[in-house]
Amino acid sequence: NGCWVMAVVNRSSTTASYYVDVTQQSDCFAYTQLTNCLPLTNTITAAGGADVYQFFVSNSAVQATFEVFGMNTNVDLFLTYGVPIPRPGPGNFDYAGTNLDLASEFVVVVTNYPALLKPGWWFLSVVNKTASTNATYAVRACQLRTNDLRRLAAATVCNTLPAGDTNMPNS
Image 1 (tube, helix red, strand yellow):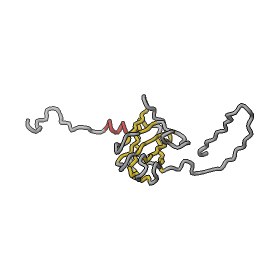
Image 2 (cartoon, rainbow, N blue to C red):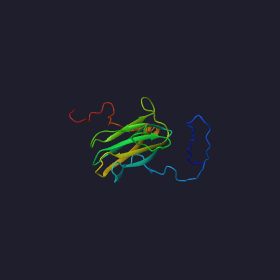
Image 3 (tube, rainbow, N blue to C red):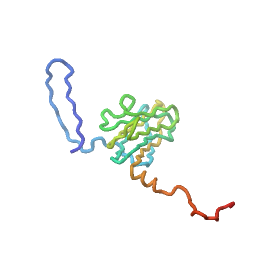
Image 4 (tube, rainbow, N blue to C red):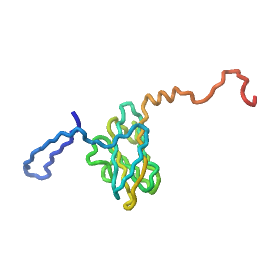
């Protein structure tokens, strides 16, 4: 039970000796968890620093959006699916939002082409691109599930009048 990540690789053509030392950790990948569609405001205080978040996408999700907005300086958004080793960033990502300056970062992942949404843990990094400024921003992740679509389809979108009703304005 829990998270397991391990690799033993011999990159030479000769036999290599090794041993494995295992320690149990119950809080693996304990990044700040985002709540569906609830923005979270934070500040990166280190120049070039990053904050990492996790977001769980359900089996019934057909779309997920990941966004960073309201920033006071240039930040980038990086996403990875599954195990965040190494953590998401400029050299490790499945998807990225890298707009310049104060433009919001926005990534949409869907269950069909071109980007494939998979259920499970998604990991986001917000990276401060400005070396001399603290980066304040809001981050949000939202998923649209099939039940959400059914509720939207069942909602009344416009007012209707019965056939033959003459109580319309300007009639």
